[in-house]
Image 1 (tube, one colour):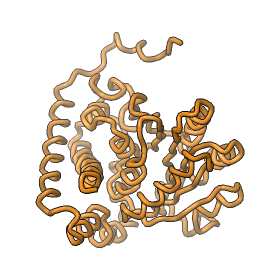
Image 2 (cartoon, helix red, strand yellow):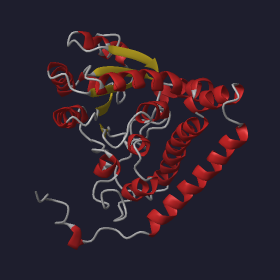
Image 3 (spheres, helix red, strand yellow):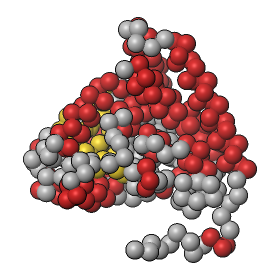
Image 4 (cartoon, helix red, strand yellow):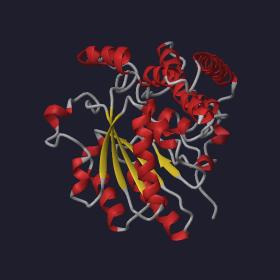
Length: 318
């Protein structure tokens, strides 16, 4: 158990340090394109993905760095991709919003709201037909919860009894619009009932709550019980994308960082219970800091794609 908890903490700490470093690098003007950060949401990706293995696939969102890292994509490859370098997970052609690594079961981050749920219906169907025991997991935000394709994918998964998990990461603001007046339903989870899909709402600041709920849903899917909708509620720490103003939510973010932070809560619990020592967690912090420093240095030094790379990775030969 100690090793498992330490691995979970390492995953969350890696995502946090990675995202805060990307925040700084983008502000310095060293990263091209748009960047959407996952800081504050680490317990969701880590809590879900700790139950997954090589049989399983996930689809991320435009805020997908954390999803990829939690599924086992090399953080250095993710950083290089964000920098647009050939050593990136997509050889520098996808950038921040299109992190993918099929070898790790990461189907890709997605710039299209609701773009992930249909993809995992396909992989879940394939797993069911082949009898692999694999599960398809789609992460999507509360904004994508209002997209018709998300509900259509949920309906399809229910109708075909697919081994799938739909993870609604609800920060209550979508891009910049509070759901308190833009959405009629109080929760995303309520929508699953009309499609015959069980759902559960969990505290997204609590890694243990997320991992317990996700574990039950994934086990159920593997056993032929069909899909589940898991709604994870929290507050992201940065704006919708880097550079956007967020004065309208500054107080909420400050409160979440100070009193609700998933890393702080994890650390306090495991140290207080004697499950992990503060020293072991400090060591992870130091190792992660060094890893992210190396990732940035290697990304900066790596070559960019050339004109000769334009026509590669376009078609797949069957």
